[in-house]
Every structure is written in C-alpha cells, then in structure tokens.
Amino acid sequence: MHNKYPFTRLRRGRQASWSRLLVKEHHLTPSNLILPLFVEEGDGEPSAIESMPDCFNYSIKYIINKAQEAEALGIPAIALFPKIALSKKTEDGIEAINPDNLICRTIRAIKEQKLNIGVIADVALDPYTSHGQDGIVKNGNVDNDITLEQLKKQAIVLAKAGADIVAPSDMMDGRIGAIRCALEEEGFKNIIILSYAAKYASKFYGPFRDAIGSTKQLGAQNKSTYQMDPANTKEALSEVTMDIQEGADWLMIKPGMPYLDIIKLVSDHVNVPLFAYQVSGEYTMLHELAKKSHQDFIPLMLEALLSFKRAGADAIFCYAAIEIAKELR
Image 1 (cartoon, rainbow, N blue to C red):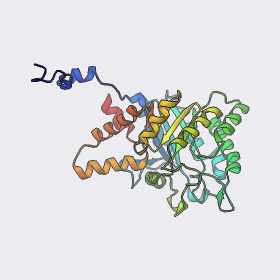
Image 2: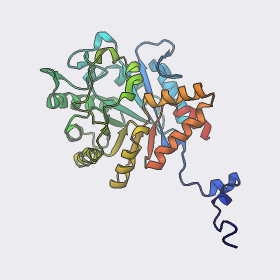
Image 3: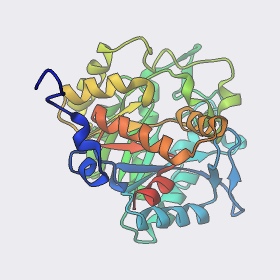
Image 4: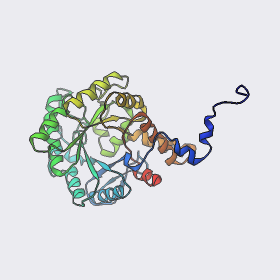
C-alpha cells in the first residue's frame, strides 16, 4: 500500500486556512515594524517624493499626525530623517550639532504629545554636508577620527532633544564606543544605541537620497571607503562583534532583501536584537512590480517582510508600515 499511495502528504496541513494558521512558522505583526519618516521645514502640505511612491516629506505638524497614527496601529517606533535646506549644508555639517535644528525641534514636538511610541534619530552627517558624505572630508578623504568628534556631539543634542534611540548609520570605525562614552558622560545612560552595524555600499539607496536632498551633493562620488563591500560576508561578523563590544544595544543590517544571507548569518551568531532595513530602492521596486504586473502592492510587501522574519530579523524598517499594520489588524 505504501508503494501505491504517498505515506506522507504535506498538503494535508495546507487544505484549510485554520490548519495553515496552526502550523505557521513565522508571524508578522505591527509590533515588528518601524516607520521611517522624512521631515522638512515649514508648515505646508506634505510634498511627494517622486522616486518613492506614496511617500512624502512632512512638516513637523504632519509628522506628529503620522506618529499618532502609527501609535494607534500598534507600531512601536518611528525613525526620523531630515531634509535640510541647501543654505544650511556645509563642509563640516555643523547644522547636525545645532540643538535647535530641524530634527531636534521635531523630536521635541513629538515628545510634547506624550505618545507611547519610540523615537529613533539617525546619527550621520550626510543630510547636513555640502558634499553628501557621512563624515568630514579632509584632503579628499572622509576623516574617520575628526568625524567621530562631530558624531558624538550630534548624538548628545539628539538625546537632549528627547530621542529614545540614536542610530549611528555612518559606518566610521569606533563610533559606537565614542558615542556610548559621550552619552554616559552626559548622563544619558539609558539611551539605546541602534547601530547600523553592517551597512553596505549599495545602489538601493537612491530614492532615499532624493528624499533627504543629498543626491546632487554626492554626485558621482560613492561611500565605498566606509560602507561595506557588497561582496563581503564574513566582514559583517567583524563589524557586529566590534559594535557589541563597544556598547551597541541593537543591530541593523542594511539593505534588506539583497542581504538576507547577512541577516541570517548575524542572527545565527549573536544574541542581540537584530533589525533589518527594507530600503528605499526595495520599496520602490515592489511598487513598480505591482504596477507592471497588475498585482496588489500589499501582498507583495507582506511576502517581502516575511522573508526578513524567516532570516532572523526582530523588527523591520518599512516605508509602508502604516499600510501593512492596517492590513495585519
């Protein structure tokens, strides 16, 4: 009889929706999502980001509205990124350490609402520099150690503004230790450091740079002297190990889907909360796939986000977090 019929039929458990739910291995919930938001000066209506469908630069007033909506949907945190006026961009990115800069004012405004939602603030100079690099350029190169001094000051002004989490995304050597020491010395012992521990020099960041207005500043330059080579795997373990030793609480892998192997590798080797960033290029790519193939966007996005969960990510930065949270609820 065993030769006549399949003894094991895996399809038995797939026949009904309830049975599929019972054996579902990975689950995506609103609590797995982080909503990135772009903030700009003024009090006007949101301005569309041309290369990111359904994404906008928001004034502070509208950022508050989005934060309230995210909280109501069970999204635990938002991440803020500024679009800095060209007149405030300088070689040394000095606006990054202005305690009354756009991001600091935004954080304070959100905190005044007494929302039960975490506020993540990026630590990097690229929105503020006239050359678009994440650090200070000396003699044609991004100077690691001079940049660290600026990043420490930036982290402190963000903490003083009320940021719950500072997220160094610059990929300078030693920046986690430098920022951790600076935070401790200033009395901010409970500020979480979410390190962009393995951030690759990717072509998938293009729409994000449009959103923060750094595309023209960067021009034909790249960030290969400090962001990781896409060809490297083992180096990611060195990066995350150093960041943990230097005081990082949580880790980030960026980009997401093209680097699922890195997420899985890090998840298997370290016991630290691990996040993934579904970057702007991935988001736009899924939108274009939906459009070109006449499919709904949300099921495509859900499938993509589950891939991060399978690989071992605890939470995911996702530009469609609000839409996905609505679908999940």
